[in-house]
Length: 445
Image (cartoon, rainbow, N blue to C red; front, side):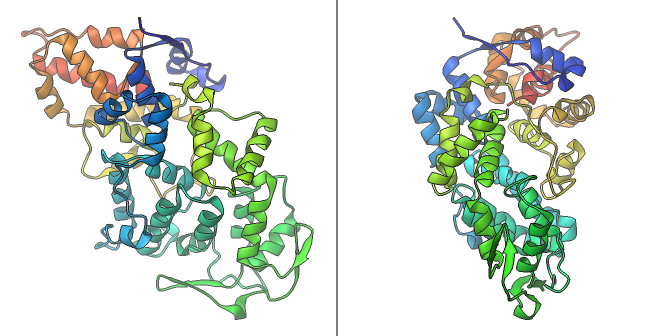
């Protein structure tokens, strides 16, 4: 007998739509518990749910499947950022080529936790390419994030703060100590580390002076001491000769940073915030692990709430697009994800994209439905035309990774019966694929 999973309640705001009410009341049935576990792991720890990966992971225990995801031995990703840069086409001198290259990496069958975590870090440590001169700086920042996505947060943040793309985005290039631009200092504390309430405006002013001196010119980053502040400053109640390195280190050492970032990653992987005291506890634990990222991910996904949270986290627009790519992908992927409302390197604000139930709003779901109906699914329909209806439903579930289905969606798939006069085999197959791409479960992780 299949197990029954009752989905946790969505927020009050999301229940204003019929779609959200359905999700809040639906009962999900695991068609195959081991495959449901494997699909859940892939939904949360990669950007796509490829059937072959589900098959492989479903043969393992939960602990071994988690270990396999964390190791990602099948990933073919150079760890050297320079080697990754060599793979990115930039002939057109257009940053969108970088974004398109990355989307293709996310949707590749060999994708895994590296790009999942890179997407997390890019959503937190944002940069808007429109303010960056040329694609090289964007590509350099991206490959740096990919190389360090599973490494050490302190090292990752140092590398990110020193990236030419960020310095240009937050107007820190050519910032001089006599009149420093405060954007980078403020976002470093408000968004990337301690968060609001844990710093003062005096800290922003001091950090802005300490961060001054960097210049991005002709695609290269250099430090000019004549623009820097070379004297003691008071930052977070401590007087010292602060500079970029020591400012970042001080913020990484602050307990609020570990609590805030670990809770942010918890929300990304689980779908809900930790209670404040639990976030502090997790942050202390992470500090004792020297802010190493992989141990933190492992602790989160081995928590009992990880598997209990199945189908409770809304997929963002890019995540949903990556899920559809197992069937079809348009040539211009950047245009496609832009039409859905979420393009890498085009965040609406330095805080990134809205999270959670916003992606279940009527407008967002409507854009996805229009996109799904624009996809060329001819090949998938032809492939399924000769299958019996029951076999076709099973294969749709397998190919789309929908191993936890509501009874309503399952009935909708099973209701498609071939009729040579009114619904030819290829049309019936096409109807099943479109149900799979637009059903409520497809919008959940």
